[in-house]
Length: 516
Image (cartoon, rainbow, N blue to C red; front, side, top):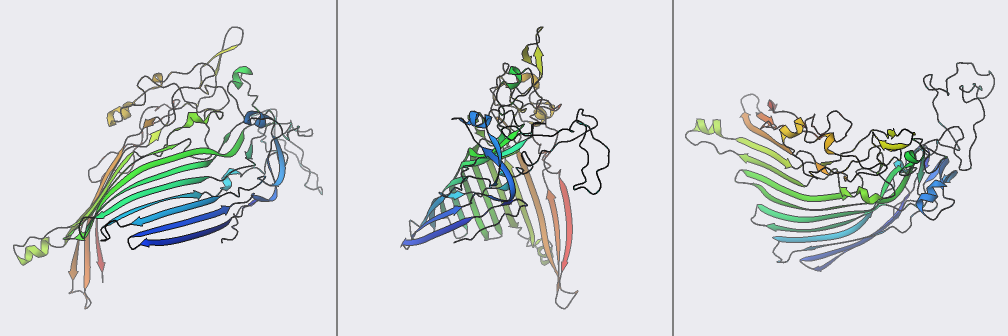
């Protein structure tokens, strides 16, 4: 049984309780089964001081509930903790021949994820407790005032800035009557995120030093944490003459923390290993896989339309479809013509590491705000900017181009520009584009590092003997130019181009080390 755990934060305290049971059963000398189950709970998240969270008052769907949500002050962020976090696990290890040369392993399990404080952080400095604003001489009508406070008064009663002289009140949802504050809400019935993990592998010893292995790995995320602005609706700027009214008019951005996303990874990896013998050691590993998700991070991003998360289903930005890694150490045989040639050519060791992998994914989008085009009567009839669905959030994706998802990632193509803005048409007014997230693949990566080494014994320097090691190394030995990512922001002057490189050009390094 695990005890409580305190999350060190100035305002939030979080406790975990967990218990775990496991048993291993040796069914036969060549077959072992392992069973286990873990239970854990993370509580309601208590606050040392009063904070804010949402109170849903009316509505049968999420849209109407957000629209009438009230920011209330409370000590506990969640209405109740998630107490149903049972995580069973099972695994087996089997030697089908009983000779110790073949091993078949497999397992499956559920693993719950701790709720990070980034989900609910920042809720203390919002109405009705605080309203944060800035007075600047460049942004009327709220202007700074340079004046003394009243001596002896607490807290000195400094006069308010110009434009804020009167009392600042709260509306029925506890929003400020002076400005629409940006706030953070967290689902009061938040469930805990978890993953379902699966593994199956076969390992075979071909010789006393050579082993081959193949594995399947599956990882499926459920109730994955996310936080993004939900105080928006498509067509807001069009319906309200380019004035952002928002879904809930009492607040600005409402970053709502939820556990509503999914992810998956399925892959296979194969390896061939040779332990050191006859002057040679090597390992080769090849991995192929595919990762899917709805976001590459749980906060700091915006979905195109929070009413339709299906638009975000795509290959993950960190997905590497294929990777080959090779490493070897070779003791170079010495020439045996004479004792002198054996001394000069003997003892040299050559080693190297090579990595070859495909590129990761990136998205084409546009960060320009909604820019209305009006007819003679002043009616909005078009949009010369982006924010294609006119909900106040930028970063929308355009329509898919005629060439689809296939682009030229050769060096000459990406340096000149593998595509241009004109290739991506804009959707109709108020509509999102048809291009998916993470549609395109960046250039791949290839690198080889080599090392040549020799140890020399120098017994005449000291009575105990002294060794000198000479080492020559070549990093990026073949001087491969590994290109960086393709620029996917349509408003960037380098859109469609690569302007950076990954890693360094070829470098040589020589060294001597004395040890005694």
